[in-house]
Image (cartoon, rainbow, N blue to C red; front, side):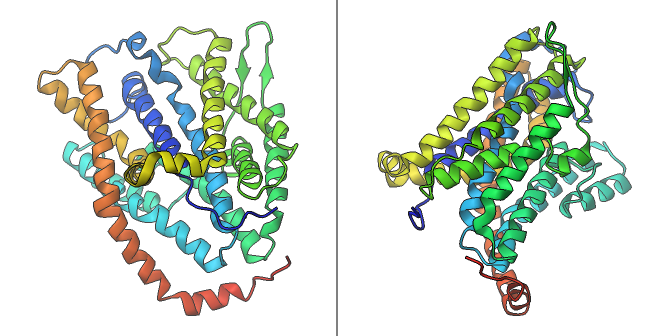
Length: 386
């Protein structure tokens, strides 16, 4: 049963924002203190135990991927090739450009990189170049997202979007194969060895299963289809990848939280499963949630959802500068971190509302002027096979 065009799923905005906050906490409260990064941080010893709740924040990225699978399937269903490509560019590029120039200002003022290095990293970043070095390490996920968008775009161009379920199955099989063959587990110690190179990421080998979960949930919850049994192997692949990434964190020489591998895996998997349950509930009871939030609540959740992408992009350079400034002003490190998180959240909301949205509107209007020459060319390759 096709339930037709659905209303906005408010809960996804809140989940997306929560995932971005989790990644920000992970980076600002743990990673930047334990790994040598070119940021102006105070020279104090980091007490990892005090930030026990920060270490598993990396799972926010895997939550993002599931939400992307859900949202992209939803938005592509009735899209033309032109409108799909336009909406992806409008969503990704303005915030990336603005955040990149914020990073340029930070690095230039602190003389972290030479002007030539800054220029090279900037060009790579704003052109979505999939290989580092970039200005900001967090953009590694954008290449993965764009590859997934490209696969969906091909379905739209060929007029076979109704076969998106087949794409999800292919991503599931590919990720399951990759995870089964890239990991040798010592069942006594729980140790896992994985070589997760950039090329495998861009081929969606480790993370394709997360996008697949999003597609399966979309088909079940918004299209009214029976939940595919392929969801189970996709979940297995996701849990394996989460275990691999947890092991990589626990085994690293900078990981300061003393945890048994199996306990660490259980915590990460639990957080991710709870998030997936929240996604399911958000779509299953979207009308009820929307009614409870009322108009003002929906507006707030929408703003938070829009701010999640800028937050993901700017939290590293801006957050580190705020921590350093707070510590220099006499604040204890813990308070400096908390205030930096509040600062980057506020800056992200302001960026989304007052900078990104007007830029998106202008870029959309500019691209729409090209709709006739480009849209005609692209749409002639689209064959409606439904």
